[in-house]
Image (cartoon, rainbow, N blue to C red; front, side):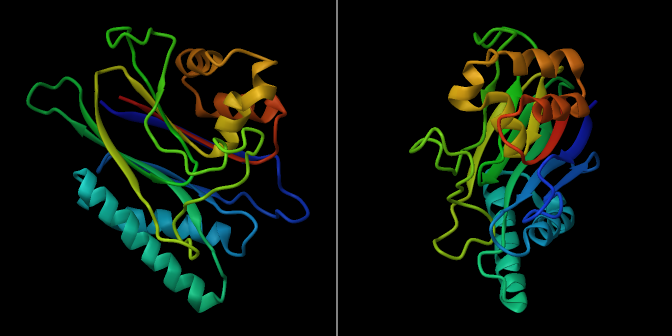
Length: 245
């Protein structure tokens, strides 16, 4: 039986950033789970993330494949463009990371997960066993990273794609992969991942593998966010949504 745990907090609220602009969606009826992170530096980031999650709620039942995932996110993007135009908020938008769980009801064991994203909010997959050759203390990233990290490892703020972007054509990333019972998935905003996995500064402070241990041992979204808040690499909005498969 699929379960989830979610928690959101921010250590960045103050002058120039007056609210936590993250939003999330978790629905056990449709088995759709998502995190949205309003894009900073433009007006309407919080409204964009909230609107994207409200729109996803209305369309969650339609997501059954990569093509329907892509269509859903593109439609939400168009809705955000319309809202931004009506409010005169240029480049108002949000990152989004969505996962749809498709259990194998014929066997009752495992199944497939369809993921879709635009932006830099990651989806991390933690297998329960070492049967896939990665080792029980490993994980893999199953979302694309639309950010400037590859070009400039020290940059944790620049994002090149998101829902609502006006300066270029939207590119939605999708993929499908298998899961087994007792696997775990973490969908989070980049405040969590940057603070727990954040580049050169992070490598001097702790091992990358600690996030696997944290996810498996705590099984708590609040613990993950609290650890990210305490890492001290960058202040940000931080949301963690754990999905237990």
